[in-house]
Amino acid sequence: MTQKTSELPTISLLIVDDNPGSLELLATALEQPGLQILTASDPEEALDLVFQEHPQIVLTDLVMPKMSGLELLERIVHFDPAIEVILMTAHYSTESAVEAIRKGASDYLNKPISIPALRDRFRATIEDIRRRQKALELQDELRGNAQFERIIGNSPAMWELFSRIRRIAPHFRTVLITGPTGSGKEMVAQALHRLSPAASGNLVTVNCSAVVETLFESELFGHMRGSFTGATHDKVGLVEHASGGTLFLDEIGDMPLATQAKLLRTIQYQEVLRVGSLQPRKVNVRVVAATHRDLRAMIREGKFREDLYYRLAMVELRVPALAERKEDLPLLTRHFIEKFSQQFDKRIRGITPRAAITLGRYDWPGNVRELENAIGHACMMCLSDTIDVSDLPEYLRSPEQAQSEIARAVTDKVTVPDSESAAPASLLESTERQLIADALAKTSGNQSEAARLLRIGRDALRYKMKKYGLIGSRSN
Image (cartoon, rainbow, N blue to C red):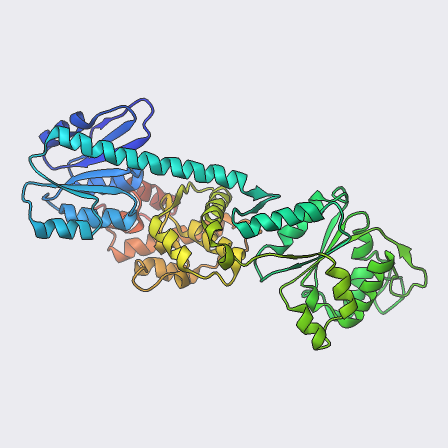
């Protein structure tokens, strides 16, 4: 292999030809500032370079020993369809040209190739790639500008939400946040608190669906020693703990009716009465409530107090479902890839176009939380530096998009950790070890084939085999 680089290469080209003279001629003819040129005379070596170096352009001969240019094209497109693959042949036919284009080739050139025409063709290809790079840079800049108090969105619905939060935060005493599960209601509550005059106080979160009904009043309002069996000491309730700050009541639709009545009094008079006490205590607390339920329907069914609803809903903020703001999907996807790359200590640079299309076709009933978990799963499963369809959870993939049996089998075995907690290194490593072991088993220990199946280079595979004690397999 030979390599020629400019001082600051921004685009990488791999030239594949079993004729060393042609390699040298093409590399010399196409050399220019800002272009890194890699060469390979062996298709298998070329695949390793694709996995390791991730070139943006591959120029390959069609007829080669061991592996044809069409087979190499298929494997490259399988790895990353964004790579521009250009085929060259001295045996041109309309049928082979059509097949090459159908399989994903960006161009099909007939030998002998005019060097000036080849340079013009590459100049246009490089300009296209640089435009795409610029678009990605702009997207990253947009993502930076599309964050509001850690909430990401650039859709009209989200800008309207941001505007309402900004106007409400300095003045609210009570706010009701509605929206489907997983849409980000808690993040809205956090933004309201941070932008309010009570930002220096506590933000106390109560998940109303997780509190045992018999302990609700004690948890919220506190109790006095001896007020019930097991009350061995006085206890400050969460409302008192939030005094001077904000109380966030998540899923308030699950709060018992008896507790709702006492909460209404607390909001109206800014005081709490501990269980077993006759002396009310003054508090100064802002209340943010959130629910995915239809509280008006619950009022009609006698399951929610109408007076509490109107007290809470003086201001109501609705968080849109992800399906209502799909234009935010690329921003959120890049944000979560960056998050999990850091969390898992893995270098993941992005997502393939076909994987992005797969995400865009899905309706996301679990909203942003579901997307976060899907990207977390993909980042954990990804062995290369780019997420592809095979790395996504299986339910997101259609049968024709599903990749190898190995990826499917391991996907079934792995549970993605909750997004709020870092994945244990042992889980990540055991997943990776299982993937490699299964690939080696599927290829009868052939390291070259296993590396291609896993979409990593042979050197990377050997390093990981040594790391996980997977030794004794043949090289090829």
